[in-house]
Amino acid sequence: MHPGSASDRPTDASLRKGPLFVWRSTCVACFGPLRGAFLVAGFRYLKCSRCGTLQLEESPPTEDLAKLYQSDSTWTSPKEPGLDDPRQEQLNTGRRLKVLGDMGVTLDRVFELGPGRAYLAHALVWRGSQVTAFEAHTETNEHLRSLGIETISGLSQMQGEYDTIILWGVIEHLGDPWEVLSILTRRLALGGSVVIMTEDASCYLARIAGARWTWLLPPEHVVLFSRLGLELCLRRLGYELAACRRWPTDIRAIACTLLGRERALRLRRGFRAARTGGIEALRGSATFMKRILDVNIWPLSEHKVYRFVRTSA
Image 1 (cartoon, rainbow, N blue to C red):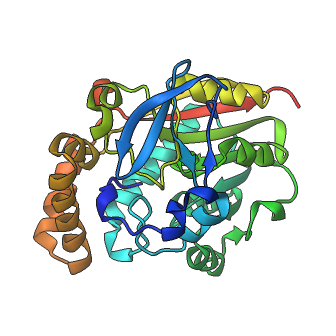
Image 2 (image 1 turned 120 degrees about the horizontal axis):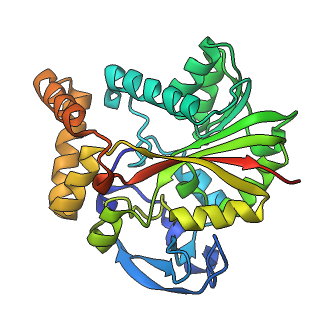
Image 3 (image 1 turned 45 degrees about the vertical axis):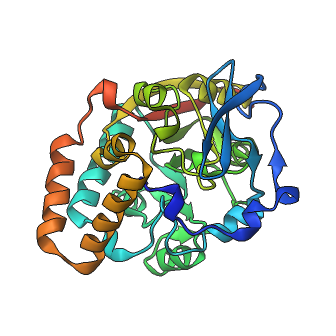
C-alpha cells in the first residue's frame, strides 16, 4: 500500500450519495460506542471509545467499493507498472516470507485476498505452496491467472479448505470486514491461521498526528483497526492471537503526515512522475532514502502483522 492525499484521488460520485451508505451506530470491531473523531476530505471518521478502532461514519456498500477498485489509479493500490520498484518489491517479499516463517505460519494451502501484483503469491508458488488468490481489480486478477496463479472471481467461488488465509494491506479496504472474515473462516481448517497486515490505529504516530495521519484515506480506507479492536473482532469469530510483529515504516507515509496534505500531495505527484517518467536519478534517490529510513523503529511503526489461529468452529 502507498500513502497518498485524499484530495487528489479519483472518487466514484456514487460513493457520496447518502442513501447508498451504510451508517454505523456501533463499532464494527467490538460493538462499542462511537464518537466523532476526524473530518477528512469530506468524510467523517468515528472512533470507538472502547477499543480505539477508526471507521467511516458512512460506509460505502461493497458493490460501490468494488467499482472504485476497477480504477487504475486509486491511491492506495496504483496499477501503473512504472510505480513498481522491482528491487524494493523483492526486498519486501523477502521480509514477508521471513515474518511468516518467524510466526510459524503453515504455507501448504494458502488463500490470499487482495494480492495486488502477487509478488508474495509468486514466491509461495515457487517454494511449492498451493496458492489461490482473488484480486478485486478484474484486469489484474485475469493477468495473475495468465501467469499461472490460480484465481477466483469472487469469494463465493472458494472451494476446499486452506491452512492459511492472508490479507496483506486489505482489511482496511473492506466495507464489511466482519462479513468477509466470516466467509473466509468457513474455508479455513480448524487450527489454521489468518495472517493480517494492516495499519494500527492505536500506534504512536496515529495518536499524535490526529487528522493529519496519512493513512486516513477515505473512501478507500473504511476501517482502521487498533490492535485491541482487531483482537476483539477475530475473537468473536473463534480465533486467538498467536503472534504479532511490527512492520517496517514507510518513510513516504511519515513525510506525508509531517508535511500536511497539500505539501504531501505535491511530494506524491513528484514521486509518481519520477516513477512513470523513468527519471532514474529521482527514482534512485527516492528508493535510497526509503531504504535508509524504512526501518523497524517502534515509535515510528504504523503497521503490524498479526497471526490469528482458528481455535473453535
